[in-house]
Image (cartoon, rainbow, N blue to C red; front, side, top):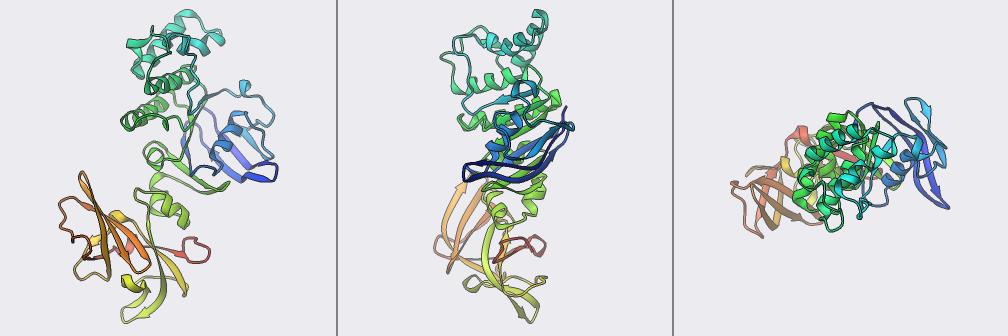
Amino acid sequence: MTEIVMQNLGRDFGDFTALADMNLTIGDGEFVALLGPSGCGKSTTMNMIAGMLEPTSGEIRFDGRRMNGVPMARRGVGFVFQNYAIFTHMSVRENLAYGLKAQGVSRSEQARRVGDIAELLQLTPMLDRRAAGLSVNILQRLAIGRSAVVEPAIFLLDEPLSNVDAAFRATMRGELKSLQRQFRQTMVYVTHDQLEAMTMADRIAVMDHGKLLQVGTPLEVYNNPVDTFVARFIGAPGMNLLRGRVTGADTGTVIDLGAAGHSGPVTVAQGGEVWFGFRPELVQPDAAGPLAMQVSMIERIGARIILHLAAGDHLAKAVLDSETPVPAQGETFRFSVPQTEIRLFDAQTERAL
């Protein structure tokens, strides 16, 4: 296992800054997901850890050893790309054994390790088939196995499941986590899919526009986003954010949300405008609730209902159990949100209050 430290890490491409002042420590054997939209700097970060790119500023250390300038072949990393890069003229067995042969591992040990990884990734029945003609799902599984079988101290995965079907992604999420636990590797996983990050990672590093915004466990990032970007990006659907104004009322300080009503009493250290945030899953139908919005659309998805809501300029969503009685489209939905689950953000800086 290996600890990875990134200190004041930055990377420029001419006048464009792809990554700025990244400070992140990934512990021995930890599974960390770099999460963010396309162009946020996560793949650039991954490529610098691997040694495929050199930092413009800052440094990377593995277990205290400075890695700047150390070639990829000497870093002890395994890398799985989005496009899997399999040798299609070789058999599945030969692909899996490729790295072991390069390391000079004995034939008996090759056979054992190839057999073990093939069993784990359900590749045993096709070990002697040529890779050419195999499905995308199997090729991606093979790419993961080929990197994992050499048991690198650091395992890097760059969007490895983005080209495969939804059912396979669900299966592989569990298998990748099992793989990491079995080999106790330090794993860094790049993804734009917050479901992948939430279900697999020990911690999530949320990035946007070349900056690291927040690092925490999936629940920490979900429950306490540091700003409105993280609030919207994490969750399916993301957090509702309604613009409002802090004002006084008979019951204490509330957030006036205009056409949508107002919050219950809140504790806030500033006046003026704020973003009033709440998770769609925490909406409670309430005939006497302080919030009211019109139902603009109803989505029924298995065991849950998603109500699309509108009031003036405000848009929101509510996620309810499929058995919950809901108003028809065009009718008013009145609701409340538990006071402990409300999150407030400064309207100007968009940082959490």
